[in-house]
Length: 468
Ligand code: PLP
Image (tube, rainbow, N blue to C red):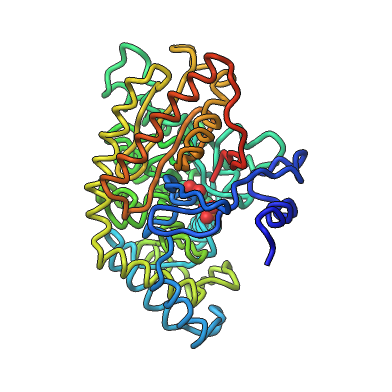
């Protein structure tokens, strides 16, 4: 058994997501040992409240023995089944269970390996659909500049975050980005209704610019998660869906973060935002991160159209060795069983509202510029010089707050000048009080340290990873 010092050394051989390759070999990440409920424990035995639930994913909380048992049972009975030639009980059962939870006629499930491959495969399905129905020119994709949709070439190209674009290449021919519908960007004096019109107008203008006959799909997260928990103005998704319908475009709702309870329902598109998309992507909470898995759900309507127009055969030549992996599916079944048995969606509705209320009390701290979110997705945005909105000055504040919070027993996810929270759905009101109290102290300490140019406690701490 390696010691934790040896493990930290060995971790230098692991290129982490968003790693700074120039600094490779100088890793200072916290080594986590174990988890239980909403808490994780580091290699020094410190208990940390896991406010981001790993990476927006450990929805049922850490350390569930019955998940381990379900995975063990599946591996010891049948470890793998080729999804090309055979069917497996868990994948079939899980697809049917997801169909029961999904809105409207989104009954058809394509399993993938993670969120990125779910988005990638869903976009390939859109291309496939338009080819089958004889509209091969209809291929252009519209997405948000502040959106994040994954790390495959296509998923990353659809993502719009500019900070991630410095050293990598992207597909640009078929992809167009519009402004993020961020309520903080509403110009002074503009009414809510006018702002909504302007945001929807951005999509309308882009469709006109590209040409409706070339536009295939609008891709958006219901709440832009990694972009900073941006909740679009009320009615935005509904109006965008209407535009898609008008122009014969599909609406892809990327629910990799918002599905499986984060907003108090299994899927958020219909229950929270009142829309029935053509395609939904999911991952993360799908298995609560215990085993990797993603999926996209496609409506009966699209499948029916393909059947009607596809002649004798229309093969969707896309898939993975691990599509519908029986072990992941068994974990998914157990995960959903736990969520339903413990009524975790209702708990998320209740504690979600409480978390938003409590986070809003942080607005009294001078450097807190905005507190926003919905359900169990929250974001506290800081600004060092009021009204300046100067990202360069604010760049370090998230990291600093994270360090102070971690020293006091809380992981928050630093995203530039924002702290992002998405705790397990099992979180209690008392644990939310604990989370907000540590965060308050962390923000105050960070702002005092910056004011007096003191240095923050030196870490053992994570590096920020601005995406995913
Ligand atoms: N889509 C959204 C909305 C996400 O937030 C993410 C990851 O954070 C992805 C897709 C990609 O998921 P994964 O990291 O599982 O590939």
